[in-house]
Length: 388
Length: 168
Image 1 (cartoon, each protein chain N blue to C red):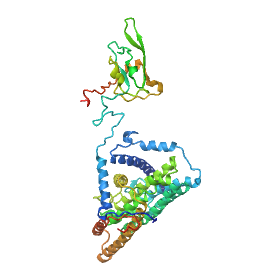
Image 2: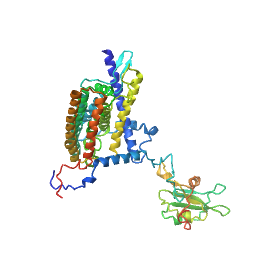
Image 3: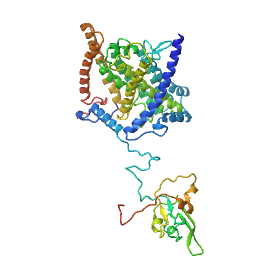
Image 4: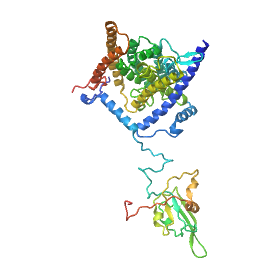
């Protein structure tokens, strides 16, 4: 028991700091990648290659004046950044980030809390984040902030459904909501879930962008029309907390994509990491691999942000309700039938054969989807077109 | 939807968001790897794309003779021609009858850097310089006296030569 408490405390501390440092570096990476994509150099003055820029930004935000609108609801105004900050960090608790670490006192699983309901926990906590945004928008007593908050709530609720539906596919195949089990399943089959569930990944990927309020779905912030949306009235550290929350949500969503569809900390093309006795080397190697996978998705987030323009609001809703939701429902149905057929009629258990068979099905579906999307008109407005 | 919203009919065969997205992503990624044109200013003051012109007219410089005295003979042409009236000259004369400036001050804040003083100078004494970094802590430091003008070391401007208008 003491061992559990001590190891958990250490893990909490380590993961919290890792995410905080990661988020800080991510703000720098975002700015530098953005600059590079615009043929600029980006911040490179503070420390070598600007590595201390986040520290300078953080210090600045600590020292800035805290403003509070006169007509704001003081209590909720203060509460909102906390409410959006805490769930953003909480979600990472159930994501396994490396192979178990052997210590003198026993093997430590490299996940802060290996909850049996892991995935449901993530869905539950990540949807709490919207409260922070809505409260911020409402308590600011500012019409732009309120509109931002309203948009955020509608958007996050809409895409939460598509997100949840796309992960049902993972659960159908894994037969378990514990994330460490999901990873073990992918390792055992030598095929990550991206193979048998690539359509689900596409849906998850798009919904994750909407869930984290990143471009092209950053309607709640929308500088051009809403100034900064829900955090218009916030300054100094309160603003910083929204900022950190956004980036930690990105980290969590990226880590989740890596875990659910790309084998988590699994090293591809080898069984060395998942079989045999745990060792420190394995833990470190898998940690690096997991970090790399997460980083690839984080980079994609940044890459997409500096490429695509923002959706119009009705387009956003149309995409969520008219495309992603029916698509994910249809996909689950097809997938469930396929799995039922393979399990009962062919008598296979989940393994490489089943993974690649489903992969073939997904390829067909993906091609059909791409063909359908490529016809255009997919994100047209909810308005009736004028008669020609 | 609100009344009166006009929805444009778009050609469906040209509005593939998917292709446009992928094209855009490829474009931004290619820019990510492209060499950057930013000049790292304080460390790097000229690059192959940009150098300061030799005709640049910046803060002044007074040239000196071999004995280290200013070449100025206090003829009074530069304060005469100066359109901004920024040159203050009080002439003096030594026992041998040589004229020299007792006071020669240029207010660089008033100066419009036209370069007429250099053009008009018969002794090639006062010049505008190829120089642009002029920060000081107080305003009165921008009134350059003779000693300061003589102590400047930056290259002098070649100005515009009517016989060689393109500077070749």
